[in-house]
Length: 239
Image (cartoon, rainbow, N blue to C red; front, side, top):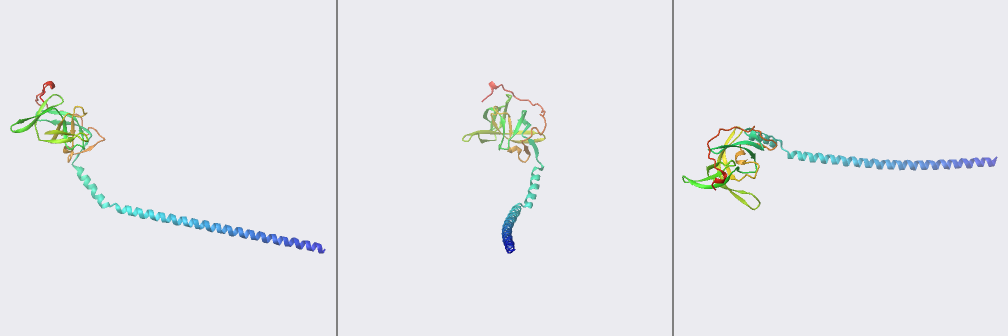
């Protein structure tokens, strides 16, 4: 009986020891989990703070950029642009042109060139002579017609990086659609080029705006009244 009592006491003691050990392990696991949870929460808070700081920085930079845009200047620029375009005609990159040379009118496709300061006309056999105390220039058109005009001046046109072409300038009438204008044209051999007439800034400015994506905005090939002219065979043209 005594032995049985001692055995039960030993078993009870071992159970108590095991229970305490289990409680200790459970408490340690709970503490470790709580510590990990606290560390994770701290990291999440740090990420939230960093995100908030980044957001404030972006908002601050956006406000700074917004201050650089002044609505009043933008609003003033638009009316000025509309005003500058109000009385101008839109033309395409190429238009039909009527060139009035006095004794003759020619119809030709003309290329609009905002990069050229002065308009240009195809001419060959160019020579100078004097008439009534003034300098004149005689030249031949593509169809062989010989024309004489008063020589206005000379211009130097850069052809390449190191060379310049000295050209004679005359005044001619030009009609594009309903626009008529008298302006200066340089005389040059454009027979190797696609267009006999080039319209530069001296005609375009204050009158036209070029839409390079369009062609023949002003209409089809016009008709003109023929004028008497002197036609010289090319082989007999004077130099």
